[in-house]
Image (tube, rainbow, N blue to C red; front, side, top):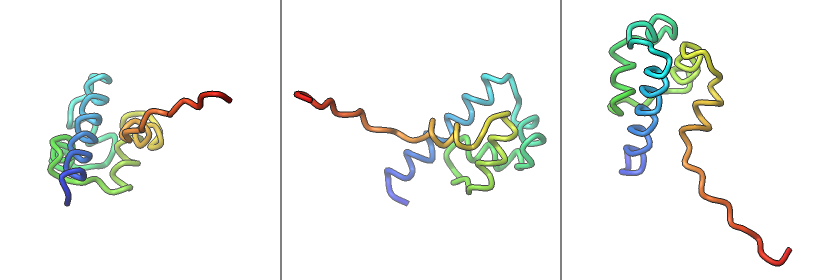
Length: 86
């Protein structure tokens, strides 16, 4: 895993934690709602484990949102360049 991958995994985990806390949900509550083990959720939030697509979909469902919302929010998108003169 490259340094970029590690940063991305940590950023993804941090975002999951922030979303969970915004919903005032404990790790245990999200684990029950998402069918992802609490220990795995904690490791994902800490950036120690890389979630697979099934985890992402289950976590999103547990948070009451679509997986696409989580995936879009986790991607760093470069700023658009303005096109001058057109």
